Length: 428
Image (tube, rainbow, N blue to C red):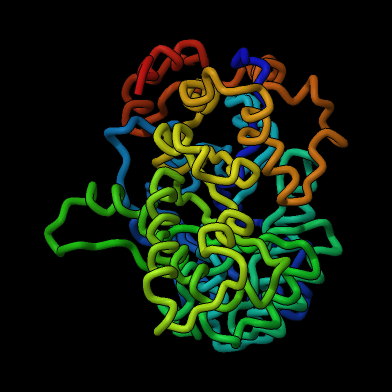
């Protein structure tokens, strides 16, 4: 398939929430208590809520920065690309990358709203969380219908409230909710506990996918205190195998047969061996562990119910015969440091070359649209959703590296997608 004919839907990108996000969304009685952005003594920006401070670290929003300036230092809005927090500029950046639609995970509230959950006043926390979801659905996603797949935060401190919120946002057209890959690490019951049953039930009823993003346990993989950061970056996606094992061996998938979960930003290359291993464990040990999958194997249950997601995974695509092609989805990860933006089409095209067109369509967009109940083509006609058509609208988008220090001294010249394509390796 010609790269310009691809239709790309990313199921994992990120939004850096703008300072005015609560305007018009928070009830008047809570307006003075809603999270606010302050400028700290060091010049960086931070959100403040009930005394808690949260910053956007550099690795969270490095789109457009030179790779040698990546880092984990706190940032301010003036130092990050406007597409991170401005919906109009985001859509322009999506067009430049040939991405038709995108699902965006939160930043400062953390992946499943831990920031709000830590509030002492839970009535306030619920009001703020609902205002966040309304902003995300109505404003971030609603400004450009058909371009953003809505994703809601749950009030994780109360499963009944979680169920209510799933139903509330589903009525607004949102059929995805983010949750923790390991809630026990956050001080809540584990994925094996029936504590979460009201939440699972509501998601099942509303056809809402539960997205477990890497890092949503508020922990990263640290092998030793003196290990370089490269160790953590290497292991982080594959570490979601722990959540995969919890999902398979917990009762939730068997108890709620319509429940679907996604392993967001977890990659897919590790899955074939994982499936082989869980089946061996089941056959070898079920006589004494008393697991019962009826007429299925654990691997079959996983393949039927777990959405798999990848950014850059040549081996995973080569191993697709061991996976469920109807459950594989693609991610861009804008504006994080692992992102393929603005060369997403060129990156994925290496792996898709030679695949049947119907397989390519499933991986690049059809699965995502079906699984997340999202009507792309009702808003954006197919002929306008292709990489070529979208990039044709973005010829004026400057994709050159932007460094604050260098801008002050020398400035930089605009760079096009074609210029950047030359930086991509020709083989993997």
